[in-house]
Image 1 (cartoon, one colour):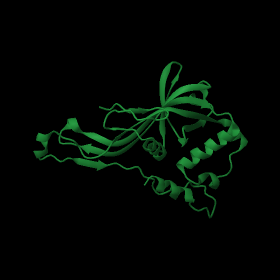
Image 2: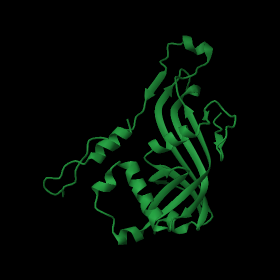
Image 3: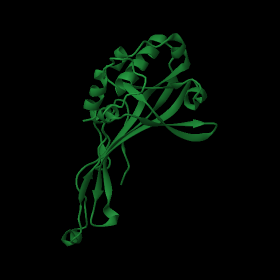
Image 4: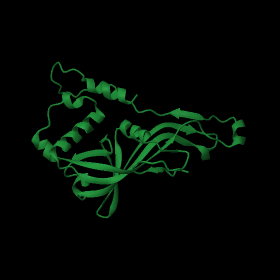
Length: 220
């Protein structure tokens, strides 16, 4: 079964399936290791899900995008949102097609989103989002202009309920199938940051910034 355990403030434990994880620290770790999240919302009466860059601070997740984008433009001042992240860690190859699976870590967040209008909070959110992807990059890049700041929308998702599911380990086959001469095991799946590819307009003498190496270390 894949029913997830749900954590509500104060994120108390709830008994559920063996793949559920009840530890808030585990949920935070899944979120913090993710590069992108898929965000679900309702627009014009229709459900929508889009990938977004994000960052977490405590019980708040920040999302950003151009003010003209659907999620920034269409949601009300406060609106329910659902955010999910998934890490695929391996292909679980069983002796029976029925028992094939994947090893994964996933988190589902439910909460109420609000538009961030306070300038200080907005600037902090943009710093957090930048640093989430590339630790140290905010100080390396040129400062954001007033025009860019005004053109960017920021949404804060205040966590109201959270759940995590994790599967790890080898396949679980039927007892009688372990004698079959059929290969079974796990094929690891990894997400990695490769060697940087510079654009063709770098100023002479520009060196590779430290934030790229920091981002690569984050995914190890």
